[in-house]
Image 1 (cartoon, helix red, strand yellow):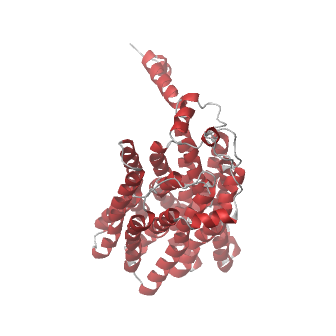
Image 2 (spheres, one colour; image 1 turned 45 degrees about the vertical axis):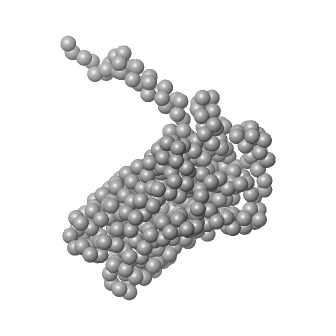
Image 3 (cartoon, rainbow, N blue to C red; image 1 turned 180 degrees about the horizontal axis):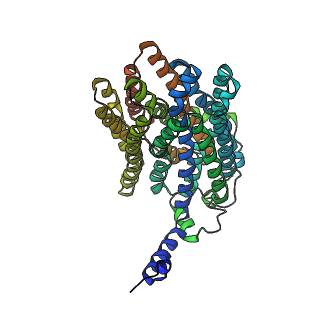
Length: 465
């Protein structure tokens, strides 16, 4: 009997399956929220990866050496660091959605602008690129703190590790999904086309984000059952900047949100747990910035691999890093559900992951390209597996200053974005080799373990400040 393919979904089984999927999604609006964050952060990280793909042909056209390239790479992090506290203030004042949406549009326009920089001449182009990437960093400054604020609002503690791992793993997914395509684009249409394409994609994502993202207290499709589940599990329900009369804080008789002041900032900096977590994040981010900024350059210039093949090979460690990030978050939440303390559930994946990440130094002792890629894959799987800093921040931030706390934490992380590109550029420029750079990166993985073991101590919620 002939079956009309246009009516295949009229069958009872298919209709039932679709109905079940819709019912599942309707009861788990928080999954859509983490999906939106995943999309936007993937594009944000792909924008940063675009610079590493364009670096070799761009530096050849503009006659840039490794040290100059390192300074351009660091321009993102200069702004990202300087505007962290302002971004945290904006989150607490205006809320996550408005701050985040404006950031997406601003950075996308600036990324597209990089493609026009050579029109102003060789010398002006490098300064303009630095300025535009600086603007991208300024726009992106509130994004990770906003992610932590959104996750804390939408997810109970037992799901927070996985949710944080999902948005944290976007750095690897972005590299895996975009690096080969961007390399192909650069090889066929020139390096400027990379920035035009990423700018257009970012603007489209900003529109989607603005239309779909809402807070738990404002979402028209959030069921009472899901809201109670989030609230009972420790979700704050508060994604807006202004304090609310509803939510767990109000229900438990907690005092209203107090004015964020310099004294709040000072007390945060004096907290040992926060400082230890932030120091470890600085070290972990060193691996991230090496991979995002320098890894394709390493493959092309140290291993003498073509740009197109480097883009393809770079996706292998990226896929492993993404897998490690998801698995690390899932393991952490599994340990928590099985009765382990929050400290054990978060620290075990971090220790195991950073030990694996430190193996990046072994690349100095092998010559085969396939072995280099294998070691890098192991190292970045480990880095992803142990990158639970944002989950820990969501677990520990005081409820009255979550945006500012996340920004303090992210400031330490972004400082690595300044030091890592410049340090690696200096090492490569002076030694004409990446050997010292790989030791520099691997040692930071071991320092992250030391910080969690010796400084952080017990992981628990910091009292309201």
